[in-house]
Image (cartoon, rainbow over all chains, first blue to last red; front, side, top):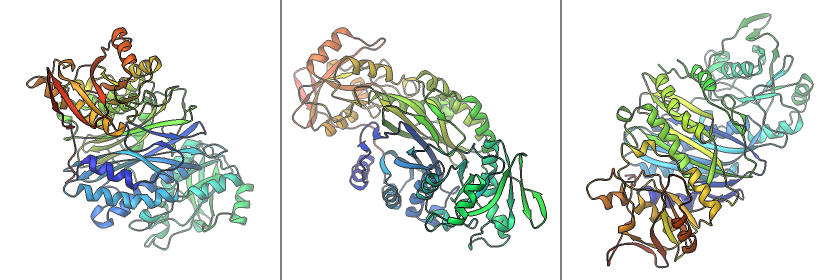
Length: 299
Length: 299
């Protein structure tokens, strides 16, 4: 199969939405976003770095490559609208691999009304690289940033953390609906999706907001899949793709009491404080928490 | 240098525009596009496939990776607004390479008021991969598609073709301004940018429009850099990044006579016809033209 045969096939496979004026097959796609503000996010996943194609298989990899982008849209309490998918496909078998990746992606795209409107499909002798960009729109109350957490705010998370490797990292549900529901119910001061681990991503939230945070070790929900030093794994494993959010104590109490999001248990895991830094309390003891999560070394 | 150091550095380097509400450093960027319709295009460039990093150097490669996307926006007569840049960087030296790529990109981004608002920066043992997505907005008259060419229309190109390898493929000017000027002056029925070569891209234009085309060999402007079988090279070399457009004969005559675009000579190279297929006329002889340009083989 050659590039243009694949593109022809692709045009028969992807589903459009009422937002798409021009989809795959022109120089650009044209998408309607009446909100006048566009969210844009991108993630690049490489075989051997972010996944092992031979272990996970192409469908799970394809799904994940889209899901991590949808999770970033969720972290702004936004709604995804369209995606473009670029592939560097290893030869031989590039055409078949492209098909399988798309088959993994399409059900998730459908579930969240995200139209695949374009991309760039290439073959080469190197490993698989997938780069997806998703555009979306903020909710009616505007995007939720990382920078709005205030001292005294409660820190909530949307689910258990740790042990995602090989499992939840592939089949997680991006918290699009959950974030939008929460945003309708209260003023979310700041939010982030947990890709690098709670310790790492909370560090980003604190840095951007100019505040610190104190976690309560006993309260952190730990996934059943996290074994060994379970607390440490919940803090640093990463790839949970749950949301961490800062809300006022009043809203926090209301959310914890009402648990308004179906199938999700909101947990109060700490507070934001004026002093910069991060700490974790276990019983009466408070120790500094390092903002370590997964970090690419460039040298 | 680690990923987050690079992101900190990047935030000090990129220039914002009045369209950017949230730039690098949150889960998504937020960009204002008041037109309510968003153009989106993406290209992935791989070392050894689309360029040779060791020969071209990182600055020219960085510039090209952005320029090919801007050329797609030009082909819709649109205006670029923002870009996200994802990198798979070979180790060692990944941090320095990322810097140089950005230094190659930034002047072009500035020239076309395109804010770099995000991306994903990774290091790995593989070759350099750059994936850029650009969003933009259509001009006031809407986007120009590939699908509107009509029998009888003239086919114009914006400049000489062929021999771009190693030269113009890196330093071409995306025809953003030219396309917008032309769109203000007349109704462009269809347009495409010439990345795969005139023969290949004219094939796309004909297929999408459901028409055929006849080229006039004597009229095709051939770049000085195209040597050997010069006509063949003008037809199939690719990477010219000029525009090919379909206009009514009346508009075609007006444009050729007035030459309204500074520094660009519009050339009338053929006509669209009702019969599907492509032909080229040399003197009194007409022969079929194969729609061959650069095509990735997937097997």
